[in-house]
Amino acid sequence: MQEILSIFQEVEDPRSGNAKRHDLNELLTIALLSMLAGGRTCVDMEDYGCACEAWLRQFMTLENGIPSHDTFSRVFKLLAPSGLQKTLLRLAQNWADRLGGVVAVDGKVLRQSFEKASERSPTHLLQAFASEAKLTLAQIEVDGRSNEIPALPELLELIDVKGRTVTADAMHAQRGTAAAIVARGGDCALALKRSQGTLREDVATYLDSPPESAKLLSHQQVGKGHGRVEKRTATVCHDIGWLLERHDWPGLSAVGKVVAERRLADGSESVDTRYCLLSAQPDAERFGQIARAHWAIENSLHWVLDVSMDEDRARNRKGNGAACLAVIRRLALNIARMHPDKRSVRRKFLNAMWRNDFLLDMIRHIRNHE
Image (cartoon, rainbow, N blue to C red; front, side, top):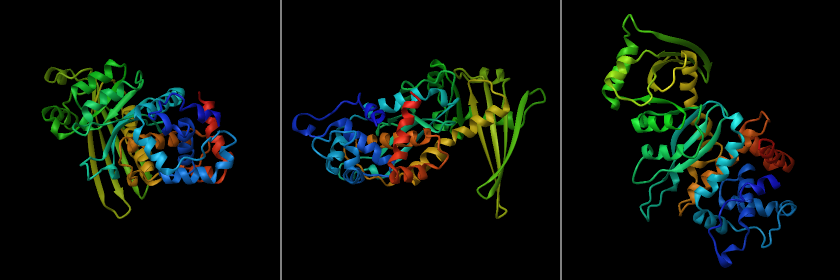
């Protein structure tokens, strides 16, 4: 248990005087253990603490007993998310050898975190996700008066992207974003959309109707599952001198497209084509892997947070509560995923709820990767 008690030591307590009836380190540890054991809300944290108080006292002093749900809510409302972020960042750095080569960046809105009375918009987070390891590396809150574009360079300052490929959707196909990624030693794979005007049009025209002299590399993969058959064809072109003459794009080295042809069990078919700017020159097979890895942030992070951890229904609305609890959820999810047991995340949470020995084993693996 000392492994988990130690990870919050750098978090600064925002309370003063009599408000510090409960040790912050112990309070945050109970919150995280509750999440690992299937808890979702501050009420769950209090209930978990009361149900397991005798067991928790083997590791904690709990001088003033178990914090109430109001205390949990008040602390998370006051706590700076950046303090909890340090814990997320430190564990991600300890697991660096497991992270793989693709870092997917995408935004997520905590839908129930809005507040009508103060006209506060829902909390909007921008996250960096190691697609192959399925681990959240960092997140920052997007300014409600702005959007994700200026937030992405700030997010990059928190993580090490050297030697990795950063993927992002079409919103981030910006010269400044590409320059920021390349400047930090990373490669970028940025999707293109129709609003990119002549740039997208030029890339699409060349890849869809290439001249005879074009040097294109292609790789095809067929997969089955979820009631459909999908054929994905990745095409990449490294010979882009013609494009660089027309468009001044930082670090641009290649362009590519992925065509996904899907046939569903009912016989219906669909075709989806995506175009991409690349600062490296991967072969077609690797480009296809990079493009596919980006969607892991939707399927392996957002979906799990909403379906298995009820994030979309979380109603924390005061102060920093929503952002802080989002970090705790991602910490719990990272810890569950780093445990070598092959069961699903949901089954790991259930076993952690039923068996303290399994919960402790998950925690021990924090130390195993430090």
